[in-house]
Structures are given as C-alpha cells and as structure tokens.
Image 1 (cartoon, rainbow, N blue to C red):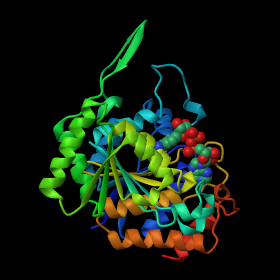
Image 2 (image 1 turned 180 degrees about the vertical axis):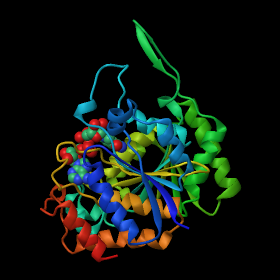
Image 3 (image 1 turned 90 degrees about the vertical axis):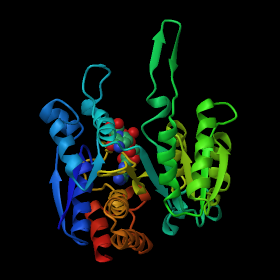
Image 4 (image 1 turned 120 degrees about the horizontal axis):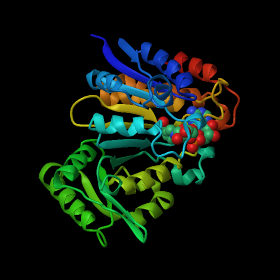
Length: 341
Ligand code: NAD
C-alpha cells in the first residue's frame, strides 16, 4: 500500500525544494502525497498558519514532510496578527512531537566549507537529540514593570521518554548534557537518565557533560560525540552550534518524533526569501530530510541510505549550488542526485 505523506511546501523557496524531493521519493517507492497550505501561504488563504483541517490530515498521515515557512510579507510586530511560525509550534504540539533529531555528518567534499580545520571534523558523525516540548520555553511566564520570569519544569516521564529515544538510536556513546551543578531540573534529568540507562541500556556508554563544557568540546573535539541528549533550551543552542560544523545551512535535515503517529521531517534552514523564485535554492537538505523520513518515519532504511549516498556522490562529483560556492541550479542538482539513485 502506498505510504500517505502530507506535504507542507510553505513559503519562499519551500515549493522549489519540495517538488524535487517528491521526484526523489517517487524514484524509490510508492507514495501518495497530499499538499496543504501552511505558514504564510495558509495565512493568505485561511487567515491562520495551520488550519484544523491541515492538522487533522497530518495526524492521519504516515509522515509529514515540510519545506519552510515565513517571509517579509508576514513579518509583523502586532502581537495579535497571525505569524507563519505559529504553524510550526501548532504542528509540534498537535502531533505530540517531543523529540527533535539533528544528525550532523560533514561530507568530505564540503570539508572546506567548515569553519573548523579538516582534521578536526574528519569522521564527525553525531546526532543531537533535543527535548522539544518541555523546559523553560514552555513554562509559565510573568512580567511586571520591574522584572520578568520564565519557569523551567521537567517531569520524570518527559525525561524518560526522550532518554529512551536517544539510547534507542543504536550508537555506542550517549553524552547527556545538563547543568546539574546549578539547576534542580538538571539534577532530576541526570538521575532519570542514569536510571533509564542502568535499567534498559547498560551496554551503551553514558557520560554526563555540563552544558558549558559541551559547547567547548563541540568545537575542540567534535569527533568525541555520538549522541548528544539534552533538554529544550540547551538543545536549541547546541544543535545550531553543531550544525555549523558542516559550514552550510543548505545541507542540514531534521526529524521531530512523538511516540505514536507521524513524525515531521524538515530542513533546518528557513524559507530563504532573498533567493526565492530564482531556481538556485540548494535542495540537498530537503533530500536529506526525505531520507530521515524514510528511515525514522517509514522504516525504509535501505532507501534512506540510497538517498544519502546519492547526495554524497553528487557532491563528490563536483555538484555545488551557489550557497556552496558553485553555480548549479536546483534543477541541475536534482538531476545529479536522481542519476545516482
Ligand atoms: P534562512 O535559513 O531562510 O536563510 C538564511 C540564509 O541562508 C539566506 O541567505 C538564504 O538565502 C540561505 N539559505 C537558506 N536555505 C538555503 C538553501 N536551501 N539554499 C541556498 N541558500 C539557502 O533564514 P532567515 O533568512 O533568517 O529566515 C528567512 C525566513 O525563514 C524568516 O521568515 C524566518 O522566520 C523563516 N524561518 C523558517 C524556518 C522553518 O521553516 N523551519 C526556519 C528558520 C527561519
């Protein structure tokens, strides 16, 4: 039976990179795609970034593939006006997506794009597992004329499920990142991760790293890490730091997963309004996001690896879009990848 995929092309370069990703997927299997307006496109059509109908369709799909949202047209300082990013938060919440996975594996052909020396990033192959629906971003907030506060809360159950997700990735080392010397939530985090590890995953190496030390090691010895497991705010910051090891935002995919139900797969980059409509967007992060969907959303591991190898092969053969210092357009990049599938 065909896999049912809801596609959310969104805004800016979104539709330009979604269409080639569907070509790549169609070359690999039987998919039924259902496109819905999302983000700014949905605000224009329906007055809201995520309609109930789109959310319901996402819930019923096998996976959700998203390109990017946002753009100057919808930028506003009016707190009551709808904003494209509200669609992203609504989807995460509506689908119960509590785990954000960002793999970072600099490709040899692009070592020169990294701000780090090649010998430092050689062999780096890590995944940041970030808790996505708890912690300080979701705690209650207060504001008075004299000050403000943000509450940071975690429950045992929230920590258990994200820890299981990280240990289940099948890597031999998990580095759990916290600030247990200062924060009570971090002390609970450390206790729960230690227990889940001892009871269910003792064959995997576990280490605890303070977040300031982790930030330092990510640039001094990134090859040390396999899985970085961490809470929402630390993960937000460390995953962007880790992303820059590859040196190019047009290359990075991400997956957001819940317990049951479909996952959400999307590139890390935004809608790039500055280059939209010119046919020069780099589609590779979108292709790699489709690969994550195949692996983590549809259990199609061989097909996922095929996409990743085709992308790497095309880069080895010299493919460079303008963001990577070349002049290949989106279409040429797509052909080069399709040729290698
Ligand atoms: P951006 O990622 O869209 O662009 C940053 C820079 O990277 C730009 O110069 C852009 O041209 C380039 N770039 C990004 N993706 C590229 C690609 N695939 N190929 C070639 N070049 C690429 O970030 P921004 O400019 O800060 O934000 C633009 C809009 O995107 C804003 O409205 C922002 O809110 C939104 N945004 C959305 C998401 C998302 O949908 N998940 C994420 C980040 C930003």
